[in-house]
Amino acid sequence: MLNKEQNIFDLVQLDDYRYELPDERIARHPLPERDKSKLLFYSAGDIEHRRFFELPRLLPANSLLVFNNTKVIPARLGFKKETGAQIEIFLLQPLAPTTDIQLAMGASGFSSWQCIIGNRKRWRDGKPLQLTLTIADQEVVLEASHKSAEDTIVDFSWWPATYSFAEIVEAAGEIPLPPYLKRKAENEDRERYQTVYSKARGAVAAPTAGLHFTAGVLEQIEAAGHQTEQLTLHVGAGTFQPIKEKKLSLHPMHREQVVVSEANVQHLISHEGPVIAVGTTSMRTLESLYWFGVKLMQNPEEAFFISKNESYRYSEEELPSYKEALAAVLNRIQASPEKQITGETEIFIIPGYIFRICKGLITNFHQPESTLMLLVAAFVGPDWKQIYQQALSENYRFLSYGDSSLLLPAPRK
Image (cartoon, rainbow, N blue to C red; front, side):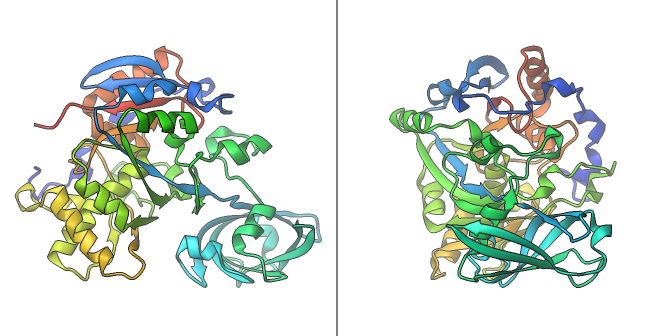
């Protein structure tokens, strides 16, 4: 472990995690069939090139795959002023009547959100914007208003008020594709920028590692003797936020909402095989669960919030096993009538981090010098360079709609 006087964030040089990504290697559209993407299989230093449908037989025996079942909402809402000016409102986080994303999507009549406002200067007069929608053959009027020209909080109201905010957004919004795709959303994105198992509405970006799975692949995984579990992390727009600071300690790590059930934690405690995170969002959730357990073992009243430097505050000798930490989380959940817990994490996983739960990772190929690139490098070590060099030389497709990898580093000694 690092000396406590050292700052791990300042020991990592961002320039070391740069590589050249030609623009033509960014996948602008998904492949016609989800599971026909390439799959780079990395196992303890060895690399093979496969196809995603081969995944079930490449997994270690008795694996537990943990999926993120968040569902992307059409978070881009377009309004037109009487002057003809186009105003785009991008939903970020709900504020009222609740900050719980899933509950906020069920709100009727009114909802207030933190937003990004496009073409803000044309909406300085503060006059409410209106949009007429059609839902189930009924005309619905959606109104957006804000309190000041500098305000990023937008109040939404609609009538009839019987419809949920989820229904309003589905009718009014556009799927928020990542900025690096450099195109507007199309009809195919409504389906293809979602996983086949998505269910909990609230993300503004897809957990893209899951885009390759099909019902057939999921069936084959279970037939091969592996197990699965689903939890929720609502992916925020901050996942695309570039690192602009040379000192990582100054980077404002994005905060995302997680929802974990009693059954999730019980399964993780009882399972004896390797835990494989499907995507960086599942990995961040699982590792955050461990640190929440550590906090609970010190103070049973702790809130479920994991700061970006939470995991770097302890010496190795004082930390519990992951099952001991998860037992503390389970006790907390079992004391709740909902039998689940909602929290927030801004965990920042960088090289030097010691993984507590995850033994494998299924993930796409990420942007250079990004927080996700740092996470992958933390997981596989210096071999990340070899992995990315081979992916480039073998014509893999990169980023959200790109190809996939199964990463199984050698066990830590």
